[in-house]
Image (cartoon, rainbow, N blue to C red; front, side, top):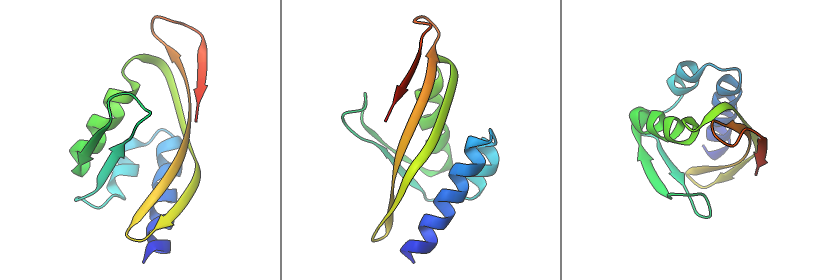
Amino acid sequence: MSQENVTVIREAHEVFERGDREGAFKLADPDVTAHRVAPLPDPETFHGIEGLHRLVDGWTSDFDTFEMSGDAFIAGGDRVIVRVSTTATGHRSGPRRQAR
Protein backbone atom coordinates (compact mmCIF):
# COMPACT_ATOMS: atom_id res chain seq x y z
CA MET A 1 0.00 0.00 0.00
CA SER A 2 2.78 2.51 0.76
CA GLN A 3 4.10 2.49 -2.84
CA GLU A 4 0.56 3.15 -4.08
CA ASN A 5 0.42 6.12 -1.71
CA VAL A 6 3.74 7.42 -3.06
CA THR A 7 2.38 7.19 -6.62
CA VAL A 8 -0.76 9.15 -5.73
CA ILE A 9 1.17 11.81 -3.81
CA ARG A 10 3.69 12.18 -6.65
CA GLU A 11 0.85 12.58 -9.16
CA ALA A 12 -0.88 15.15 -6.95
CA HIS A 13 2.36 17.14 -6.68
CA GLU A 14 2.78 17.11 -10.45
CA VAL A 15 -0.78 18.41 -10.92
CA PHE A 16 -0.22 21.06 -8.24
CA GLU A 17 3.07 22.14 -9.83
CA ARG A 18 1.17 22.75 -13.09
CA GLY A 19 -1.00 25.23 -11.19
CA ASP A 20 -4.08 23.05 -10.69
CA ARG A 21 -4.58 23.09 -6.94
CA GLU A 22 -8.18 21.82 -7.17
CA GLY A 23 -7.11 18.92 -9.40
CA ALA A 24 -4.33 18.00 -7.01
CA PHE A 25 -6.61 18.11 -3.97
CA LYS A 26 -9.19 15.89 -5.73
CA LEU A 27 -6.55 13.15 -5.66
CA ALA A 28 -6.26 13.44 -1.87
CA ASP A 29 -8.08 11.26 0.60
CA PRO A 30 -10.78 13.42 2.27
CA ASP A 31 -9.22 12.47 5.62
CA VAL A 32 -5.71 13.59 4.58
CA THR A 33 -3.39 14.93 7.26
CA ALA A 34 -0.48 17.22 6.39
CA HIS A 35 2.20 18.51 8.73
CA ARG A 36 4.30 21.64 8.54
CA VAL A 37 7.24 20.72 10.77
CA ALA A 38 10.11 22.58 12.38
CA PRO A 39 12.37 24.20 11.39
CA LEU A 40 9.64 25.71 9.17
CA PRO A 41 7.83 28.61 10.81
CA ASP A 42 4.63 27.90 12.72
CA PRO A 43 4.64 24.08 12.82
CA GLU A 44 1.08 22.82 12.58
CA THR A 45 -1.01 19.82 11.57
CA PHE A 46 -3.71 20.25 8.92
CA HIS A 47 -6.68 17.92 8.46
CA GLY A 48 -8.82 17.24 5.41
CA ILE A 49 -9.08 19.08 2.10
CA GLU A 50 -9.89 22.35 3.88
CA GLY A 51 -6.73 21.85 5.90
CA LEU A 52 -4.73 21.51 2.69
CA HIS A 53 -6.21 24.78 1.45
CA ARG A 54 -5.30 26.50 4.74
CA LEU A 55 -1.77 25.08 4.56
CA VAL A 56 -1.17 26.32 1.01
CA ASP A 57 -2.93 29.68 1.54
CA GLY A 58 -0.94 30.35 4.70
CA TRP A 59 2.34 29.40 3.10
CA THR A 60 1.89 31.34 -0.16
CA SER A 61 -0.01 34.48 0.86
CA ASP A 62 3.11 36.59 1.50
CA PHE A 63 4.59 35.99 -1.95
CA ASP A 64 4.06 37.50 -5.39
CA THR A 65 5.31 34.28 -6.99
CA PHE A 66 5.54 30.85 -5.42
CA GLU A 67 6.79 27.63 -7.00
CA MET A 68 6.99 24.31 -5.22
CA SER A 69 8.36 20.99 -6.41
CA GLY A 70 8.52 17.59 -4.80
CA ASP A 71 12.15 16.44 -4.89
CA ALA A 72 11.83 13.14 -3.06
CA PHE A 73 8.87 10.92 -2.17
CA ILE A 74 9.58 8.38 0.56
CA ALA A 75 7.27 5.61 1.70
CA GLY A 76 7.13 5.44 5.47
CA GLY A 77 4.61 2.80 6.48
CA ASP A 78 1.18 4.41 6.13
CA ARG A 79 2.74 7.83 5.43
CA VAL A 80 4.50 9.50 2.54
CA ILE A 81 7.31 11.89 3.35
CA VAL A 82 7.94 14.52 0.68
CA ARG A 83 11.05 16.68 0.47
CA VAL A 84 9.92 19.92 -1.14
CA SER A 85 11.86 22.76 -2.76
CA THR A 86 10.28 26.18 -3.03
CA THR A 87 11.20 29.32 -4.90
CA ALA A 88 9.33 32.51 -4.15
CA THR A 89 9.37 36.28 -4.46
CA GLY A 90 8.15 38.15 -1.40
CA HIS A 91 5.68 41.03 -1.55
CA ARG A 92 7.88 43.29 0.51
CA SER A 93 11.40 41.91 0.08
CA GLY A 94 11.41 41.52 -3.70
CA PRO A 95 14.33 39.11 -4.27
CA ARG A 96 13.58 35.50 -5.24
CA ARG A 97 14.54 33.00 -2.55
CA GLN A 98 14.91 29.26 -2.77
CA ALA A 99 14.48 26.89 0.15
CA ARG A 100 14.66 23.14 0.69
